[in-house]
Image 1 (tube, rainbow, N blue to C red):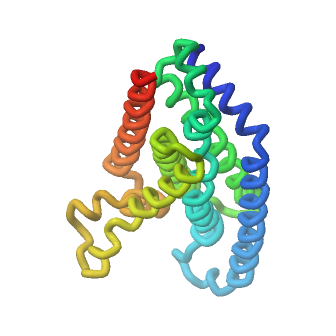
Image 2: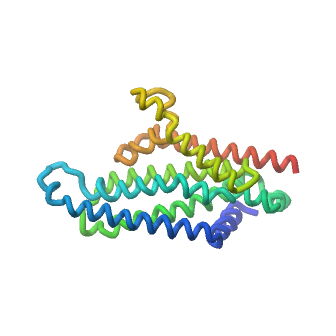
Image 3: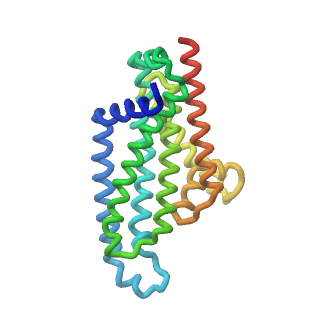
Length: 251
């Protein structure tokens, strides 16, 4: 079975699961409502901002905050979406069938990861259509919006990798979801104590996901931030592959 076949199979499973549709409907509805509120607040203060030569615009007050709300929802959505990709196979007893078909552990992990990532990117694209439909009626800062979008893509890719890794280690989908939620929240707030103590540098701040995402949301693109996300994705997928390979050797 090829990588494309594994990805297609997992994608079809996502499409037939009610949970994926419920998550999409609830989150997009919530984001649409918040987009309306942000747009109303932007229009209400438009006259006051007209007097400011370099005041915040539509991108700063509507588009980027909307993406920030999607980032917050992702901490709950991604663990729920990815919890069954491998733990569900193990629980249902279908994982040995993939091993018997001669599918390498790396191909199983990567195929399932790409399916989850595809769903998340579609979720992000549908959210982006909300501010983009008003591009003709307002002045979008395309550079800042592109930077924020890149940041969200990297964050979703990292969260998906962590979710797949937790699912590969768990014996039950619920345990995988809880583990992924705890891991991502810990990774996001690992430097909270250091910031409260007034320390804005050091290794512990470098480890925090927020340190690397927030500059991208502000329009500051750094190769160091991109490399951090890539390293996290590779590490999580490598751990998942190693765990699945061990399961295959044990039979």
